[in-house]
Length: 256
Image 1 (spheres, rainbow, N blue to C red):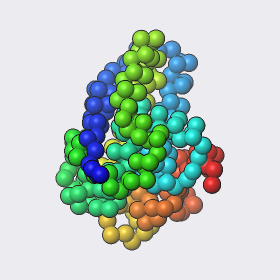
Image 2 (cartoon, helix red, strand yellow):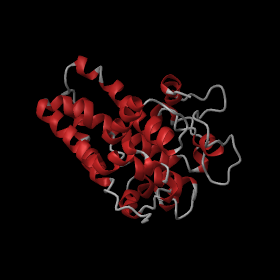
Image 3 (cartoon, helix red, strand yellow):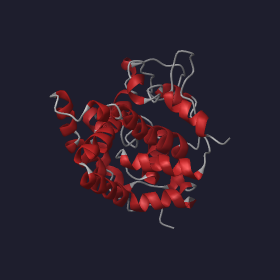
Image 4 (tube, rainbow, N blue to C red):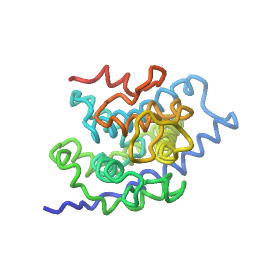
């Protein structure tokens, strides 16, 4: 069996949103945004998109930290796709087989040792040759395989339909949350492996650190050293004052 899939390019969904996403930010800054009641929904939608990546792609799919219903799994996968994270299969393969297995080496695709811009965005251009050996279990999951094969169709079709219905709805409840969600993940990959920017609770072999200044922006993913020190834990906290909003959702939707 061929263990190398021709993966749909991650950048195909990320780059358009990162470019278009600057427009709603400009409208907000210049006071040309939609009415206040529209704006009131924006933080909630941003959290939904970020949870698609954090609770869905990261903790549910990549690490199998918890089990949940098919409905919740599909909801999280959908928001993971809409946040511009690409295929859940590719995402998990990169995270398991490259980031955790080869942290801080050249085989870690988004390691910051090659510079900020590499860990922030240019790593994604390497994802067409990602080995999926590390995610054999996920290749048996029909929901994940469906999302892997169709994430670009889902992403662009949803964006086109919503944009046709209402441009403001599209810009502020789809484009902007996706833009912010990508920034959230990129902040983690870019800064949580720079030792001088954080502290450690676990004496791990890699450079992962906890960035207290980052946690409000990434829904708990900032406690990265905790995650590398205890990768089987669904919670990323160790000390009482470390806050993990993603784990709050997990406690609600988990079955086990």
